Every structure is written in C-alpha cells, then in structure tokens.
Image (cartoon, rainbow, N blue to C red; front, side):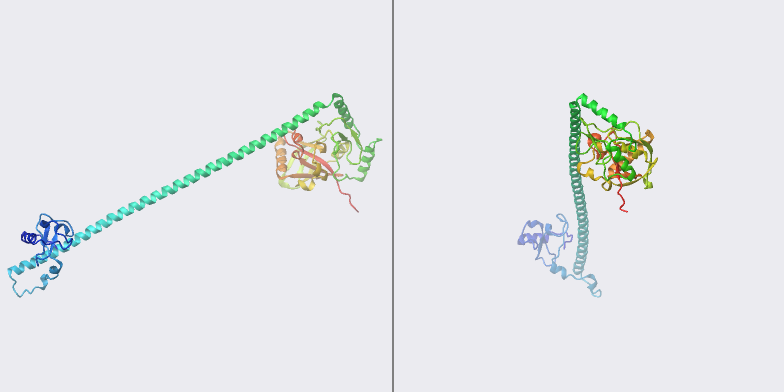
Length: 410
C-alpha cells in the first residue's frame, strides 16, 4: 500500500543496501524503490505498484505482513493515553487503509469502464459481422437470381428459335405442296381440262334420284330412297378414294364410276343449297345463326336431295371427333373428295360467332352430329383436310359428310 510521505530516508537506506523489488525480483532502478515503512525490509518499485505510477511525490508503503498487523482505530483503548509517536503511527495506518480502499475503488471503476468499452467494441464488431454476412448473403442471392434470369432468357431464346425453325419448315412444306400442285396443273393439257369441266357441268345438271333415268345410279338412288337409309361411311363425293382421277356420281360404294382425265379439286358451288341456324342441345354452346351450306362441286346429286330434307334449324350434338370419324377416313384420311357440304356464315355479323365455334371445335377435337331423316350429317373443321384445302379466303371453315344410319334388325 502506498501513501504520501515527506522523507527520503528509507529510499536512501535501501539504495545503499542493494535490495531488489519483491514483485519483479529485480533491482531495476534503485532510485524508484520504496521500502516498507514498518519493517524496513521489503521494497517495491514505484512502477510496480498497482494503479497510477507516482514518481515525484513521496509515498508511504506497507508490505502485506506489516499491513495485516496494523491496528484499527476502534481497537485502541481510549482509556490509556497514547504517546505522540503511537498516535502518529495509528493515523498513518488509517490513512494507508483509506488510500488502499480508494485505490481499490478506482481500480474497480477503471475495470468497469474498460469492460464497458470492451463490450461496446465487441457489439460493434458483431454488428459489422452481421451486416457483412447479410450483405454477402444478399450478393449471393442477387448473383443466383441473375444466373437464373440469364438461364431463363437463354431457354426462352432457344424455344423461340425452335419455333421459328418449325414455322420455316412448315412454311417451306406448304410452299412445296403449292408449287407441286401448280406444276401438276401446268402439265394438264387444255383439252383434258375442258373435257373435265364439261363432265362436271353435266353432273351438276343431272336430275335428282327418283326421276326417270336409265342409269344404274338412278336405280340405286331410288332403292336407297325407299329403304330410307345410307350405307355406313358411304362416300359423299363424285371422286373415289382409290384413284385420284375417278369421279363418283352417286352416294353408294357399289354405284357406277366415270373416268376423268385430270384431277380437279373440290370447290363450293356459289349458290347455297341450304340456309338456317345451328342449335346445340347443350344450351351453353348457344346458337350460330344464319349459316349457309354450299354443295361441293364433286358431290353427287344424292347430297342435294338429303340437303333439301334438312330443317331450317339444325339441332346438333357436340361429340368427340373419334366417336363419329368415318372408318374409311382412318386409313386414307379425309380429302377434298370427302366433302359433301361447305358451311359458312351468311353475313359479317355472324362471322364472330361462327369462327369462335370453329376455334372451339379445333381446340377440343370435337365434331357435330345432326340427325336427319335418312342419314346423319356429321360436320368437321377444315383442319382435318390436307393443307391446301384447309382455308377459304384465308379462314378455316366447317365441312359436312352424310353417314348412313344402322338398319334395325327388327
């Protein structure tokens, strides 16, 4: 314990004795040694004291053994008068104890401040680490997001390139088919084309079945009308499926054929053979009003007869296409020779509803079945035809074919 003093006697004696410091064990700087004021045997460097170093003031210091033997003021017997020397010693001891307590309190306050400063520094470091970690995490997430975005863009670009390639291939195929069709038409001689046109004109002027006529077609047509049925999946056109240059002039498979010298594509006859409305049993589908039915230029006269029997309002069922698709189409597919009737909207106000119906039928792969007197009229979208026959005036349309009803066994 250090305490201010006003004498260099102890220090001078200690310097002559060559005493070492009891804390560091070294003589060090002898002029800084302070000896115990009680035993005069122990010494301690000024800079080895706990707390601030006192170089210029005189200090009083007691070693641990001497400090333990100091008597508290309360233990002194007040009845015995103390000598002046003893009173000075007690006063010095009390001062030393107070100084020690003050030093201990100062050290505690200093430690507490140091601990608070350390805690603040650690807290700041922790906050910095958290901020740095959060920033690193955000940077990683942003980098990962950028990578995903770049990857998505690359995939989208590849998909778009594939779509463009597919469109180019389809366009090229269509162009090749058109060029091939033009080339075949150029090869046809003017005489054969005129002959074919004359035959078609004759077929369109042919009387309907039921009139007096000496051909096999008339006899078979009359028989078909009496039995009130059409053969299952019978042809509706004037052209057979086995030869591209044969024109069928009746509805049954066993009716006569006439040879043509040149293939002629089916076209809708300008004058409509039927006009009316189309109503679905499913009320949600609504009504497509004012439809026009145009007979195919390759259809047989029996088609005209069956078309005239149709009511003004057709009541149809929307069915899956596979349920009503004719068996003869499953192997060779539908062609323009398969068309019996073309269906178009009558006016511009009906076009929107008509084209919406066509789009729905195409998207969901549906077909329309309408029950007639002698046969069932089945209507398909034009997308079921070859590419060159799918559009009229650059728009999709509907086409129909008559199918015979099953004969009852009873």
